[in-house]
Length: 92
Image 1 (cartoon, rainbow, N blue to C red):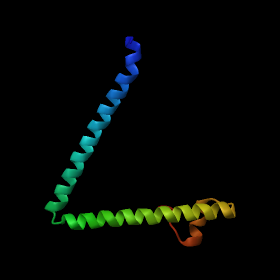
Image 2: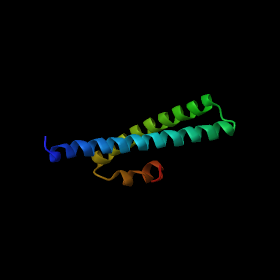
Image 3: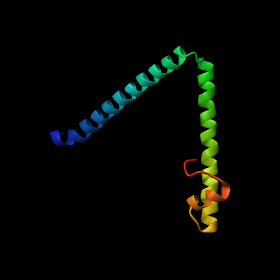
């Protein structure tokens, strides 16, 4: 194969190396954050429970956003226009 035909594979390989390095850095940062929380007196069980509750909250919020979107389509308005009707903040 010519040198030109290898370049796309080289670029992909380099991109993968970069992505792996980024993930390693994120993993290290998360390990440091966990160590900090543990040093502040939090337990692993407490942290896992908190994470579980955040996932549940996000799932419920996603379902609510989906319902608001469908209702907005039915009414022919934007989702943003429905927020005041249901006492929702735009930051919610």
